[in-house]
Length: 236
Image (tube, rainbow, N blue to C red; front, side, top):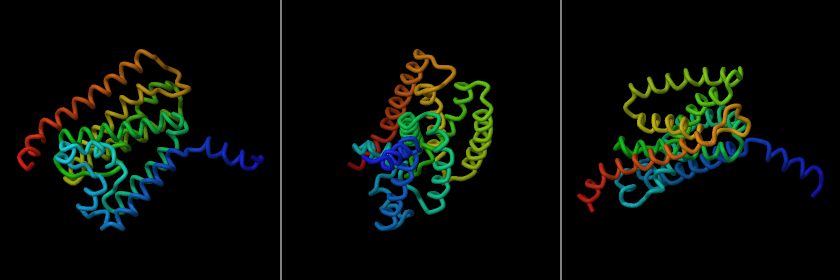
């Protein structure tokens, strides 16, 4: 392997390739949605893995994950993609590649599980995971006390969190349960994951937050299953 190839591989390794990969997969899925019938077409959304509660109860547990890669309409995609790009790249630099991937994935899972438990509507979008990224910025202030850049980032995104939640209250089409679940999930997961260079790290605390996260996910799934299994049995 020559020097230029090694340099390119090293640059890729050091760059935010997880954020870029998420954006790539999300873009591909949006194109697939458009090809199969349109991103606002309910049948297409259901076919590709949108969150549908009675289908989750029937055994489609992957629908707790796949919705974070689907979007309803171009503006929905563009807005979420911009946040993943600008915030995701910053957070991947702080957390490292695989911690960032775990943060994004588990936040989306938490948001979708909360939506499964408390929202009966079909839903899709990366917002569940994105709100987890928002939540992580609130924790970073505690992991890096006194760090001016992280403090400024947390302050800016705190305002964005408030604005999004307020907007969601007055918009019936927004999955508030998914947003709040993603936010809380991301907050808890960030404590569990910590960061490679965090100034304050406690292994016992990390374990307790990890167990708390698992317990909450199980509880949410049990709530969702208990609420919608009767509906599934009625139509099966």
